[in-house]
Length: 401
Image (cartoon, rainbow, N blue to C red; front, side, top):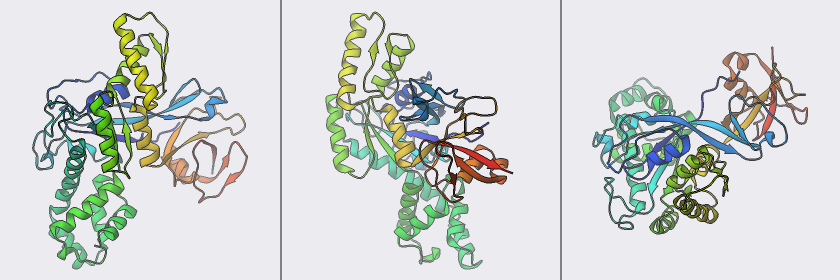
C-alpha cells in the first residue's frame, strides 16, 4: 500500500479576497465564510484534487484506492491548508500574527487568492469594486512571506557568522539548517546565493538588504506562488485580471470564480447537474427553479468564456506547472496492471518530475526503496535505468530484493 504523504498546498490571501470560498469550493468542506475580516482563525485543512486528464483509467477499468476516477478522469488528492487572511505587517505579528505564517512551513507551493475585482482594500475591508489595485495585493503578500523568512534568518544571525567563519562550515549547510523547517534544499539555497551575488560574500558582511534579497529568492525557488485571480465573474474582475497579467507577465495567473465553483459542486451534490470539477460546462439533470436556472445560466456563460471556474486549474497549476510534479501508477503485477489482490491501477503518486524509479519506491515505502533493484515500464515491458526520470502517466512495477 502506498504510504507517501500527499502534496500540500498553502492557500493564502488577505481577508475577503475569497480565500475561504476557494478552499470550500475545492474541498466541499464546511468552513466559515463571512465578509468580516479574520473569519478564519485556526487554519482549515482539507482534501482537494488535482485533475489528471489522459490518465490510464480512460482505457482500463481500474479500482482506485488512493485517488478518484470520474468518467475516465483521475483526480489525485492533495492537502489544502487555508490559513488566516494576511494583512500588511503580519510578519511582525499584526492582525493574527506570524504564527499563521508558520502554518505554511510544510507547503512546497502556495496559491494566492487575489480579489481581482478590487472590491477589498489592503486590510480586507469592502470597498467599491475597481477602486483597489490587485497588483498591490500580490506585492504586499509576497513581501510579508519574504520578510517572515528574513526574520527567521536574522534571529541569531551571529551564530551563522560564527559557524561559517570560525568553525569553517559550509555556508550552504548552515543556511539549510537555519531554514530546515521551510523545506529548502541545497539546490534552492545555492541558486538563491548565486542569484543574490552572495555566494562569495562572508555572512559577517551581509546587510539587511542582502538578507532580504536572499530570502526573497529562496522563497521564490522553494515556495512558488500561483495567483488565483478571483471574482472574475465581476466586470471589474476581468479588468483586474488583465492588470495582473500585464504587471506579472512571467507568473502563473489563473482567472477564477470560487463562488461559481462552489455553486456547481453544491448543485452536483444535490443531483441538479452532472459536473466534473474542472470541466468547461455541466449538464442539467433535475428540475430547476427560475432562480437556480438564472444562476446556472450565468455560470455556464462564465465557464464557456474562461474554460472553467479556475479552481481546479489553479490546483493543477500549483502541482503540475509550479512544482512540476508528474503522476505515476505503481503496480505489483505488470501484466494485469494490478496489486496482489487483483485491484487494477489501485494507486496514483504525485512525484517531482526529476524522480527516478528508486525515488518512487521510497515514496511508496522506505523499506521498498532500500530493497530496490530495478523497475519495469508496464506498458512496454522495458526496464528503466536507475537514474532515468519517470514520466507523467507511467505505470511501473518495482523489483526489489
